[in-house]
Image: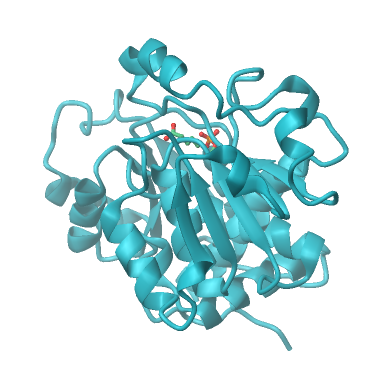
Length: 309
Ligand code: CP
Ligand code: NVA
C-alpha cells in the first residue's frame, strides 16, 4: 500500500533537497490524495507559517493541507510577533520548533531560510525566497504529468524573469528529465549556480537546458508555456523599468500559436493580466493555470506527510 516515506533531507529548502525518486514519490502521493484514494493522518501535528511576504495560494494551501491531515497550523504574522521587531532568527527558530512540528517560511534571502533551518529542531520548508520556489515546482510538474503522463518527451518553455520560479523549474526539471528552455531579457537570466547544478544533473544530455533571450525560438515545439510576473515581490520600485525591458515577452495568442498545437499554459499566479500573459490566454482552452493552483494543495499535503512521518 502506498504510504509516505521519510525523505533523506530533513528540510525542503531547494528543489535539489529531493532526489528524483523522492519527487516521483511526492507526485504519486499527491495524485492519490487528489483522487481521494489515500488518507493520511497526523493528528495534533502543528505547522508554523512565517510569511515575510504576501501570499494567497501558498499560505492557504498549506493551512488546508495541514487541516486535511488532521493537524493544525499557526500563521505567524511578522508584524504582530517579535519577528518584526528583529528578534534573531536563531532565537525564533529554536523557540518555534519547540512548539511546532514543521515550519514553512516565505522570506527574501535564501541565507535567512538556511539560518532558520540551521537552528530549527524540526523540518523547514521553503515557501518562496528570492532564489527558489520549490513547492511551486512540485505542483507545476504534477500538472504537467497529469497532461502528458511523463516528462522525458516534454519541452517546458518559461518566458520571463529568470528568478525564483524559473530557478526551481530548472532544478526540478533536471531531476525529472524534462527539457527546460528559459527565454528572458538580457540581464535577467537564471542564477548561474542553479544553471551549473542543472547542467551537472543533465550531463548525459546537455541539450536539456537552454537559456535564450529570444522568446520566439524558445516556444517552437514547446508542450508547456509558463510565465510569472515581471516584477516580483520586493521589486515594486522597478516596475516601470522592467515593464519596458520585458516588452515582447508576453504570452499572447501569437506566441502560443508558435508552440506545439496541444501546448498547455501555466502561470504560478498571481498574474498581472495583459502584462506577462493576456487575459485571453489565461482563460483559454490551453490554460491549466487553475488546475496548477489546485495542485499546490495536493503536493504540499504529500510533502508534509513525508516530513512528518
Ligand atoms: N504562486 C504563489 O506562490 O502564490 P502566492 O504568492 O499567492 O502564495
Ligand atoms: N516571482 C514571484 C512569484 C510569486 C509567486 C515573486 O517572487 O513575487
